Image 1: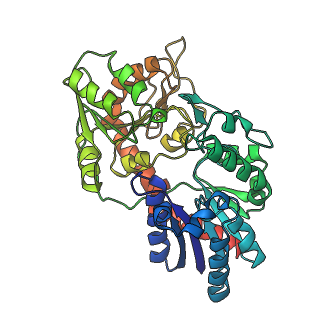
Image 2: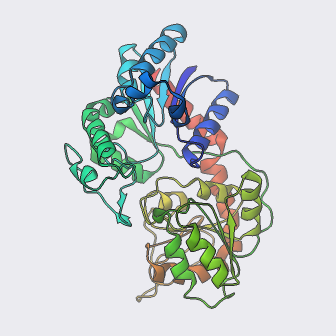
Image 3: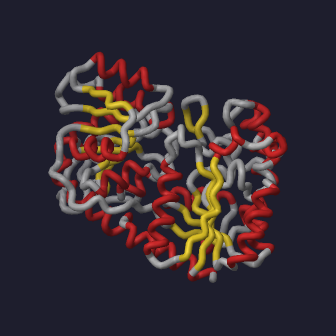
Amino acid sequence: MRIVVAHNRYREAQPSGENTIVDAEIAQLTAAGVEVLPFIRSSDEIPTMSKSAKALLPISPIWAPRAQEDLSRLITEHRPDVLHLHNPYPLISPWIVRTAHRHGVPVVQTVHNYRQVCSSGLYFRDGMICQDCRGRALGVPAIVHRCYRGSRAQSALMATTLAVHRGTWRSVDRFVALTSAVADHLRDYGIPTERIVVKPNGIPDPGAPAPLGDGFLYMARLSPEKGLDLLLDAWRRHPDGALGPLRIAGDGELRPLAEAAAAERADVTYLGPLDRAGVRAAVEASAVIIAASTWHDVLPTVIIEAFAAGRPVLGTALGGIPYLVGADAPREPAGTGPAAVATAAPGEGRVALPAGVQAGEAGWVVPPEPAAMAAALPVARAGAARIAPAARARYERTFHPDVVTKRLLDVYASLS
């Protein structure tokens, strides 16, 4: 099987889980005997482009003529079975779908965000969830609010691109939805269910989990939609030291918030940005990983990393987080009264949880509210050792490379 993997890499200065996942997927496919033809562009190329190439940048999200020429040559020379597209912006363009189809090559796209509809791809604006452009022929609200890169001009270009390529996206042969929430988003966009496959990302197996550490780890880009302020508000509702340590890792515009919390309380440590070895050490030092997103986060890689390391997750009930934690299906009530909610995960027995706290197979989810997060923190700390084996088992069954690669090969085979 011969597969073109197309991806516009995000700038290396901006840590990208999507870049990491694409690299890992190429390695997994190659290990499985697939001939991978990378069709990769990088936003880091832009500063070194010639003046003539830069002059075409304003239209590249819509068309990107040089990319289409290069892809045509690649297809003509190698005759791939499938083109697998990840991020097309800004140097590849959704037009790549039309180019592939013109050569008779079917297209698979992994949907990493909501950019079929939302110019920023996040469904998040001004500190809150926003779907103002949903259902519109042209995303005028995105232009008004400068949703793409803080620029009205660039937002107008992206909104126009989404309008022009509505038919392009609807011609994709198969969509890989990373979670059930993304599948719902695609159906709302008009994609038939039979052209959607739910297949999460996978990460390499780090080996047998180390014994649980203590306390909590929050590891994310320090930007508003990732919920650091929500977590710190919840954390401050408990006395200093009552929950064990809270470690914060990452960088971004909210870094001063993390540094201030570490200076304010003895039980908070700011680790800064971490390399891969630092990430592993931080995970192993902790008992529970926190994913406090306040947007419909598609598939936070940190959750899969937590499960691979045998760590349960406490997350918000938004986007793909309930799916990842295994809390996206209704559960039998664990009792009666306002303080009783769903039963705990399999093997926990019938445990009444605080209002708003829902147990899943490999952790817990709560509404994106400080009170609910505060109520869940001691529950997660007390239950971490009990849930840890289930977290590792969920990784092995759902997110291990052997599992996800086989599912992806099945998608390719269904089209070739």
